[in-house]
Amino acid sequence: MPDAIPFDRVVRGDIVLTDRVLRDGYVAIRGETIAAIGEGVSPPAKEELDFSGKYVLPGLVDGHMHTSSSRGWPGIRGASMSAAAGGVTTCVDMPYDVPRPVTDASILAEKIEVVNSLSHVDMALYGTIRKSGGVDAIAGLAEAGVCSFKLSTYEYDAVRFPRIDHPTMVAAFREIAKTNLMVAIHNEDQEIVVRLTEEAKAAGNTTPIWHCRTRPPLCETMADLEIFEIGLETGAHVHIAHSSLARGFEIAEVFRRMGGKASGEACIQYLCMTEEDIIRLEGFGKCNPPFRTQEEVARMWEAFAAGRIAYVSTDHAPWPKDRKTYSGDIFTVGAGLTGMQSFAPLMYTLLSERSLPVTLMAKYCAERPAKFHGLFPKKGAIRIGADADLLVLETGEFTFDAQEIQDEEDARWSPYDGRRMAARVAATFLRGACIWDGRAVLAKPGTGQFVPRQHNGTYVGEE
Image (cartoon, rainbow, N blue to C red; front, side, top):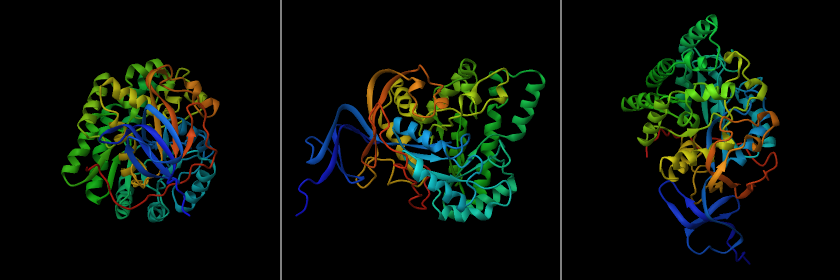
């Protein structure tokens, strides 16, 4: 006799879709997937969880994070705990890992094993190429399930994070174009940054503001132009991994009008932080590209309102505190910010401060990153048949406390420590199971699993 109760769990609240909010609605879950969505009386289920008065959003998809750039693959454990506590149910992890970047299918297979044993949330993975001689590995990485590729116009390390020269980049883009996968680029001009940094050091200019001065807007836009030109030539979908400038999105739009597949994302810090903040935060405010002016932040919101931004991400990079501590030379400090546990509260706060609807959070922090990385419709939306990944937001007056970050002790720092927040994450569900109850991470390592790219279609933001 079939079970008379059709659903395993019903989650009630104000259900946030990309185009509307279902007040006093519900999401019904069967197994690991969403089986029904509605308003009014709940259907029968084995369990009902009532979050009335709170928002229920799709679990966020963070399209840009670095679990392993400083800590190696063991960093997946702590970073994914931060994700669970921040309502991020799917992470798209960068390939620039210590000690080996993800440059071929065998290394990818090893990383997938680690993800499946350590992660608290689901994880998609980027692939990359070696500084030279790695183009032949692109097809194998795509076949093995990477969701996207990442290359750089600026070199942090010749092995882990190399600059790819123009001829190699052309060849790589041609191969990536055959896969239909997106190739995201770290977009800073090497020659400008190196020269300005050398001149600043020679003049004794090593205070925090000189991080911004040695990476001016021009070094970004020059990189944007060259990568989009190569994309136009090769047919590859080329994506700015992080634009701190509204002009980056305008350039992408120009290339789309010319027939190119061009896009760019905004990391959340570029929607709220300014040059004054790096002076205040010192090393704990250092990231690349750097913070810009208050006027640029305003222009970024104009680009967001105009629909030019692909999606919003964090570029989460949990350096140990000692690598972020400024002691007189900003150039010796590691570049990158923590951001996943603060992602949902901060994005809601920034939208509410501008009287913008919460539906934009569902669109730009869940559905669109899932689409760009080929994870939709499995991930990124409250829709029937999708994974039951949910974020419950409680609105009110809160203060973000870095000591509450779910990670190793030396990763409990944040550029948003002490910031007023208009919401907190009350619960997170991964594939139907509660993995964060507002106080503790309930998931065990290995609860999260690797998510391969779901299809080879290309999405550049068209609605």
